[in-house]
Length: 270
Image 1 (cartoon, helix red, strand yellow):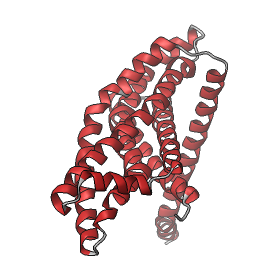
Image 2 (spheres, helix red, strand yellow):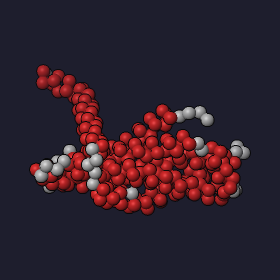
Image 3 (cartoon, helix red, strand yellow):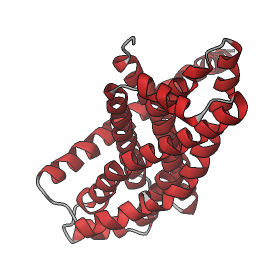
Image 4 (cartoon, one colour):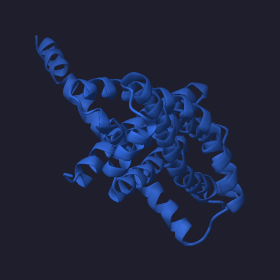
């Protein structure tokens, strides 16, 4: 009877224990990310930067991401502009289509589209690469040679990320805007000149400031989270897949949470 009661109590508290372990794991991961980020900033401020490696990582992170960002931004712009155009035409506000579409692209869709695509393509690649290096003891070899893994591996990727992410975000915004112009003309018979005039009257300088702020934050989240997961994963081949999945999930979750926080803090009525 006592054993049965003990099992019942353990079964009752099992979800609580699992939640506790999950929270401890999340807090530990946040602590590791914070430490790596401050070490990265320290090396950057000290000027310990490998320009050749930064250019190499910029090509990998930025140039190779243009195609997937193009496709995603194009069809996102098509869908969003089609929906907005049809709704505003019903209310006789077809001349405002350009302003609404461009505002959504600059403040939300552009940074998120680029961030999600880079998280899926680059974040997973970084996590897999660094995890493989950990498993094959290449990271340990760097430490034996007195080479700091953060300086050697994280700093170039972070610098490349914060350089290329704003470019990809602006590019996604531009592609989406072009798609919006096309759909507005076809679906709502709004001339490109009318569309662009609405854009000019709606968009303010602070909208671009928010855009670049979100791009910088997205790059930080993707690179630092992915590098942290890669540098703290040990095991075998199975753990490479687990680390890759964790990097994508953490990065995308962080992007959406940060996007909401920035939007809430920077919102100002027009």
